[in-house]
Image (cartoon, rainbow, N blue to C red; front, top):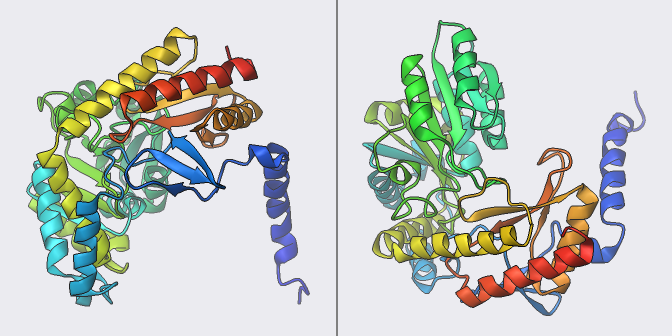
Length: 403
């Protein structure tokens, strides 16, 4: 018997990660990932080791994290239902809050019904696996989120990638695909690393021409694009529909969980076919209540969405005019391209010294030589915050040689 219990075979992988992280963060001042920040409830600022810094890499697009109405709803749910539901949804886990939340999601998504999962990751894996399998074909954008990729791989379907937002390439892939079985095209509506938007009208036309279903992940679109934050269909004036809409409750909506919205037949099918839904504990009462209240606030306060869009454009313009690359961003997600992994870590460190938290994203999460700071504008950022952030990014860029 192997005396090490098999750890000797795992050690090379552990060592490779240790060496890579050590090389990137050998200087303690460069440590940016997995750092515990204390975010202020009533502003866009956060505390790091006693220093007050402007947070520019958070996901709380609508600025509702810590909103007293959301917190009150979560507390009330705990008082009424406790801290957990003690079961999966199919058995003892469903509470009235789940049904209220699903009705609200369905209404917001303009669909017949919705289903709420424990996470956005579970929603993607469960939905894709419940729709396609061996003998089917799923086509995904090269930059699709990891949860989409994993869902496709686990489904057993034939997986084909097409170039990012390249509808002509998708059409060629569809023409070459096996004509049998279900054909499913899956894209993000807003891409979390580049901040660009999927070309819905063209995607819809190609899918219709080749008898394919279109599924769109609204994780970074809900509350961000569209006149009232309704997502990609609203962004394109509700002139084009997707077949299956999916999103999260942990970005613009400051809670946890994921959702899928579609026809009553589709949701009825997924209740029994989506394994992460069927075999995972139900969403906790506090999280369901927080998500429900946040969606209701979004309906009542669409000005939050307008603020995000206006301030994101201001920041992007200031960076671009100074020569900083932001790719094809047109949303609240703004990639500030640094180049190499080392350059991204150095730039993040310089930004922090200038008073701003801009967190680096490096390979393999992004392509080689496109390491970046992933910046996100939220409803908590005042115009003065945006001006301060722009100046900090420009100062840091000069100091590190980016401009």
